Length: 278
Image 1 (cartoon, rainbow, N blue to C red):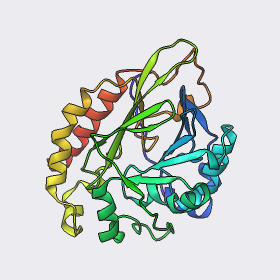
Image 2 (image 1 turned 180 degrees about the vertical axis):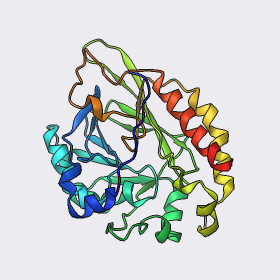
Image 3 (image 1 turned 135 degrees about the horizontal axis):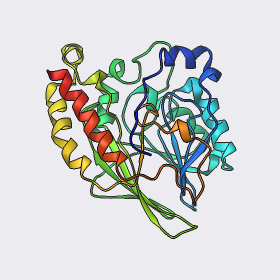
């Protein structure tokens, strides 16, 4: 199915803070080893079964943490199976549940060195962006290195520093094998493409974000668009529509397999950021 995005939700933080069940969604598989497990439709979190424990990409906010925990259980996994928690960037909507999950699972928490410093220096621009959510500060155990892949079981994840949305926004690339066919799929999730932090009004009030980050974002996009990706996963599901096929995955049908989606998604986000400048 070709690339398609949908309008963002209205008042998602207020909804998740007071009536999170209104945005609840059951977990669903998106690739041979990966499930969407945030439990809600605003911000994504993904569970990767490596055969030797699980990797969790992002955690959403604490107000929806019970939905995430329930989603993990529904996939047939337990929270204690999570061995690594990978955070895409320092915004509260992606790291808000990390501190609680760190305590519940004992998993190591990873983030870029750049965003760990951004988180420490500017809580008002990261962890405390919205007063309706009450995230706790996670302990960052380890930093990413673009030169050193992360390995657990059958999965090797390569990280790529992709600043713009934040100083240390990180994207993830890995491969999975279809057990039914033996086909190998290249999977990716961009760490953050939101234009809300790449506009001049944001730069005017930010202590650390500057137009140079936007320039870097735009310079990186053609390189990213050229990377071969078979299954593109969004950090927010409205940025790449995946909810419309929730629950339809089988190893034989592969409803999210489309090598054109990643490039189209990257080029569309580049277009949106360039429109801010104009």
